[in-house]
Amino acid sequence: MTPGGRIQAAIEVLDDIAGNRRPASEALKDWGRTHRFAGAGDRAAIGNLVFDALRHRNSLAARMGDDGARALALAAAAGMLDLTADALDAMCAVPHGPGALGEAERARLSGTPAAEAPWIAGDYPDWLQPAFERVFGDRAAEQGRALARRAPIDLRVNTLKATRDKVLRALERFGAQATPLSPLGVRIAPPGGFGRSPNVEREPGHGRGHYEVQDEGSQIVSLLAGAGPGLQVADICAGGGGKTLAMAAQMDNHGQIYAYDANMTRLRPIFERLQRAGVRNAQVLGAHETDRLEGLEGRMDLVLVDAPCSGTGAWRRRPDAKWRLTPRAVERRLAEQQAVLQEACRLVRPGGRIAYVTCSVLPEENGDRVSAFLKADPSFRLVPWTGLWAQAVGGEPPASADGSEETLLLTPADHGTDGFFLAVMEKQPET
Ligand SMILES: C[S@@+](CC[C@H](N)C(=O)[O-])C[C@H]1O[C@@H](n2cnc3c(N)ncnc32)[C@H](O)[C@@H]1O
Image (cartoon, rainbow, N blue to C red; front, side):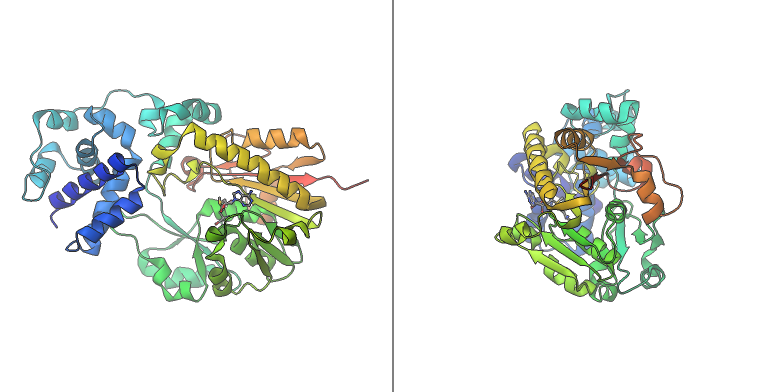
């Protein structure tokens, strides 16, 4: 396909996403199915254009004075390929392309964008401005802009089977580098322009269980949660098992880790992943096995609550999700967070800990939730994250993005990770 043909395809996919309110990945898959002539390179390029248009929807629409699919795709292409209006026009005025630029489009693309409100410059929904301002103050636009960038591929080295050096060597041809914060992380930078990311899950090292795809932020909160050999650990929102696997590796197959999730479908991939990783101390509890969960009451040294949340911290990876998020959906997540924290409270032993994690940057789901929990149950106290960092990660801890010394907020702007929040709370021993 010509570059112009790719831009036209991106316009069609963006129309489908907006018109039918569907996830971008589904719309892209359908487009691929009905356009068999497009090769893997074309599909990747169209995906990049669509995702970049969605990442920067507010600022691109403001620049073009139009939030339609054509305006977004043209502005995204100009930005991503660093094109002048003339060069973009030449690219578009081809058979199967979107057609020559109009006068207004040329003028918009050539002009300097006006000063913008933080939610436009930062490309986040305007209704989230109060939350962004509360947590980030006058850095809201900067934090939003970083959440709108393309994300790298981060891998966590599975210390049960490999070392970081070994994984770095195996993935050298992809430009793999050690991550700056996690001692277990390997990073492959995102591609520029129409480029394609390598499929690291097709590599032999992945098949052998040497590494798993996991954002560096997720690795760090898993480390700080404090799982270790000999402990009794429950991961009660285990999902596909990303953090279960990370904690199991820290436990070095000593002690017991129980992985539970209310949704069996989400839990499904965990069996194969545990096996590949060489984990032998995990028990998976399905939603129908709440009796087994009850059997753990008051016995756990550590309960990880990787809570259902708005996912605002993961917008780099799912840029369409930010425009689908609604205040009602956030409200629902808040209720779920409360329910799951209460469950954790039942399982933890006196002297044990709850590690509460979200991939959200919204204070309602993070600090507010923790404050409400601590107020309702004064038998818990916060364990400051800076001390945990010294034990589990080592080196000088960075500052939390919200300035807190007690709970940690990681963000792409400040830490180069996805947005993650962690609060560790200890239940006072009985006297
Ligand atoms: C953020 S995801 C977990 C991701 C996973 N821990 C990982 O690292 O790959 C949150 C999970 O919580 C689960 N969940 C929601 N409400 C729950 C509840 N009341 N009890 C247990 N799991 C729940 C959801 O099914 C979802 O899989």
